Amino acid sequence: MVLEVANLNIRAESRELFEIAFPKAARILEAAQGYISHQLQRSVDNPNRYLLLVQWQTKEHHVVGFRGSPQYQDWRKALHHFLSVAPTVEHFQLI
Image (cartoon, rainbow, N blue to C red):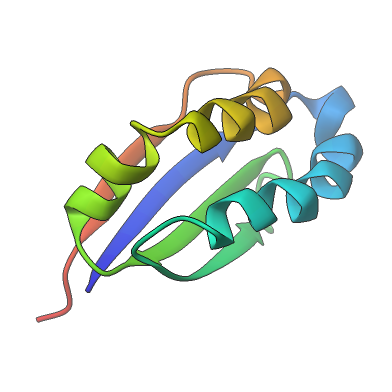
């Protein structure tokens, strides 16, 4: 299993709309091959910053499968216009 950690910085004026839009976009994510689970967390210290934590069966399921799919374009259309900067993404494995 691999954990994707995405740092999302949302424009302040779009925060509420982002939170409303996220559940619909999450259904796209949930349908992806190799998807296991996800969490979206908002920073207590910086309310415009979110962490998206997604568990995948493998890194390839995320990077090649999901990001290379037409569904990823739908994901981007649903959420990326809320971002103030491009997200940073890393992948982690439990040791």
